[in-house]
Length: 161
Image (cartoon, rainbow, N blue to C red):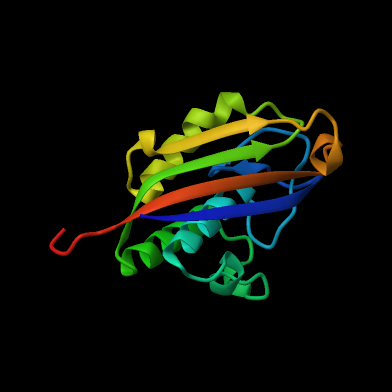
């Protein structure tokens, strides 16, 4: 078994979409980024890469490369799934948390889990997503950004599977 941790944060601003876990969430502000800014998926990607003993998300999908400009983070997750498979690992489970003051995330969690399970080709029960606020403290509490953390546990695929 191997474990990896991921963390990502993006600034909130007007005239941007708010996409988390591959789900577009209606809100007056969205996440600013080179890609679609889905910091939940970015944290999950880094947790998978870390558990594989690979480099970070910026190594494989640099924000200096126009190929990844405005790309859906779901596509980056698909590519990460392939990197993981090439290393002969499979996901045991993912645990993650979204840290933001607003909007309320709980109505979207099931759809996020379903979307991620389909892209990762795993059972929905292997993905946990939680949400919390920081009680109006810090940049997330002041609604300047959203942060996400993820932990991923991988198992080595046995020969012949």
